[in-house]
Image 1 (cartoon, helix red, strand yellow):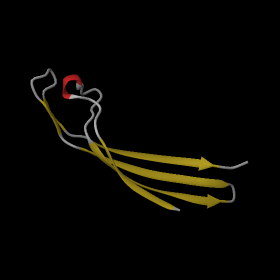
Image 2: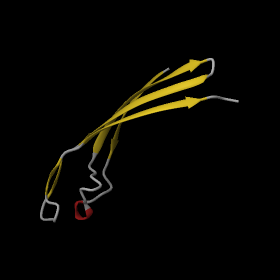
Image 3: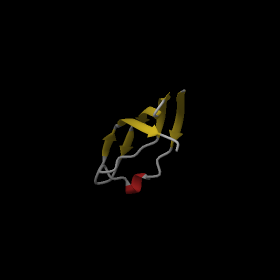
Image 4: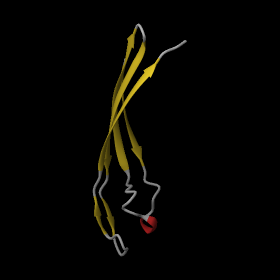
Length: 81
């Protein structure tokens, strides 16, 4: 099986409470994955790429322009008893 998807996530963090130790911005998420059936169970793989919108914070302690991106890999194994 081959899987894929696209999503959009709005940031729940307003500019007033923004903190760069937990950067957050609106983002698009692209994902692709696969499931491979074997005799001993199913192997699952997925890759997600998050494209964060640039965020500019003004008139705060952390004023500045913030850019981020993220890659997430997951591997799973499933066996039914």
